[in-house]
Length: 315
Image (cartoon, rainbow, N blue to C red; front, side):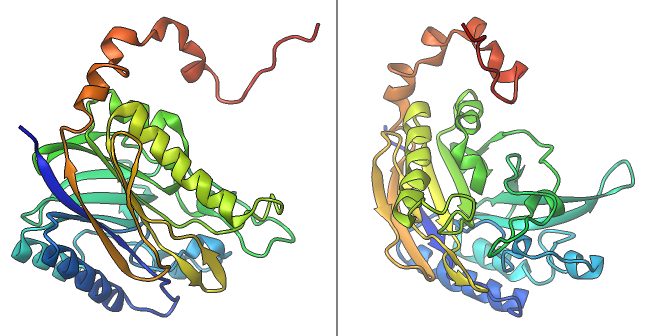
């Protein structure tokens, strides 16, 4: 018997630096209601959905840096999103910047995503692991990418959660490019992976890379991860020209077969919807990618023993 979860991806257009949390949340609620009207029981919002993508700037004031972070979730500004979720009976995925005081008494800063169930209750949390970019500004670049400056590496691993009658997982932006992300989730039997991204259209360190190639790589990584682990992938972009930097769209829903089911057509606020059969990937996980039958972990040691490549000796 099939388990159908009608799911939506809510792509966002640009968020300006002076746009308030309340204004952004109002946009999210409009899309949440749109998703619900189309029958969705889940809607996926992007990475760092509540603010502009601030790691493009060098910020010297700690107060200004902290203004982009949430200290609790739900917050006063986001409570209405949780209230509407509960009212409509629709779950959601939300990316945001998280600031907290750890058990060590030290402030910690993470790029975070949560999964909220159809009762408006947080059922899962993930903190971004594969932080791209640099800790220090790079000279002669049209914009910066300073996630390593503002965020710590996530400390929760890649957990899977039981929610909405399925096994759910999350990752964030650059995580989607790494096969380890999907495999660690796949080894927990994940059936649906949700993610958001803020990805500039051009790569300032590789000027010959065309926007077309960037979008190809965006989808290639997610389609491969979906197929090789027999899982749905729901990906929400923040797209368009935001504070002078153009971000790719291409938000999509990918089936466990690796096929693109639906893709956003615009670079603005847009909702796409698909009926997702959570049992669709079962035959893949039981045949071609039957991990228990075919994986050979005794030969995979380099994956966890080594980070960078070490070339074989020259002859």
